[in-house]
Image 1 (tube, rainbow, N blue to C red):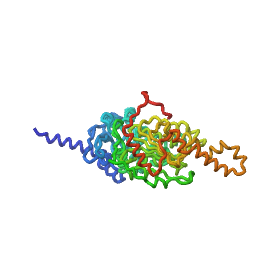
Image 2 (image 1 turned 90 degrees about the horizontal axis):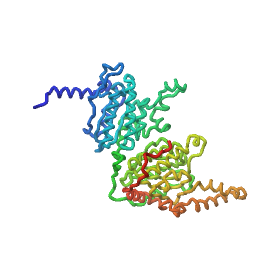
Image 3 (image 1 turned 45 degrees about the horizontal axis):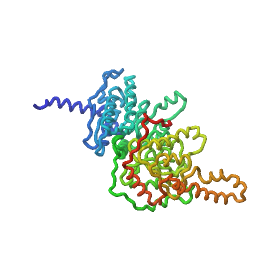
Image 4 (image 1 turned 180 degrees about the vertical axis):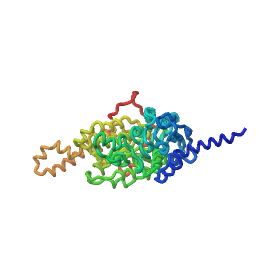
Length: 517
């Protein structure tokens, strides 16, 4: 017996209403502004034809003040699952054409059901945020909806990757959901994220501030450090999320998507020997080292505009997914500070969650001195790096290129912090402090009495480097694995990574450690 055509007509009619969202006129206006619709954003995320929608026919409960007769297709959010480059992913996109994408009870329930499914299935979640915030008419039910989403963000944290795209407005309490996810991508135009807007700030404090100062992608990427990546537009943001997913496993029990080459490249790369300047005080760009170390074009930098004195990002070495943490001597001479410590510690913990090996490149003169750093809590923030590296059980390989002084040497994953392999170039200087500072303290009387303090200083500096800061001194004490020819760095690190593929390390059973926050 055939299905009644009227039933199919009704189904198609209802589906078309869902596709039209807030109406074709509103959809057209978005296109005029160069914005994609919620469905278009999901269309470019998922492989063609693979999207399976959840809750298309869900509607607002219409119990709020002033919304009794208002029809809200899908209650302002499109949710579902599909394949991204052949791997299953869950995603939702808020629909600004439906009541400004505001969050009500049904809207929140759809998101929660999707996240519950993602956790059970063990698949990543991509969240595309474009909302005016809580639906005022639904009162406390809307607030409850946010709370339920926050709870699931936390439950999913460390279980499945969560990527948030800020592609429109994300204001008030709504901003906390993306803040609880692993990665935040924000579009350069047509987006804003903040807790209190300019009017609220002025009313409460008397301060006059424009949105661009604190709510824009640029402000979040370079000043507050709230986001990880800036996208040119909607399409670019979705593409960035796909690149991120290409480095991440589906869940914490899965292996990263390695693409191991059949053979490891052991060819020497002479370019490494040309990077480090003869003068140890001269800066160099660590990106030159990274580019030679990783597979061509594979480095995907994270938070590149924030705390530029440290570089973090994902890459592949002979097809193996790795996380890179590197001091940047070209900015603040590579010293660690409050922001750099936070940035590195967070990245290390993400790598550890998702079984991604960590390669650490070291050229660090120490922690930045200064009253602002001390009062700002550099002890607490620096301790985050120590905690993150020491707690990490993934493969950890450290390469000391040049300076490795004091507590910063330890913070950059020394053998004492659990590095599996530590290599040093002949240019490495591993010591409590730099030769200049050490000599001035140890030989202060001799230098004052000397008729030629400059000559004596140079002699003592060389002696200190030879006896106390030489990489061979560290090797003699079994604190490093080997002193290597820089040209062999890529092959040696690649071999080390392959040998650690089967690494299994546990920590004492406990609920969780108490990281300094």
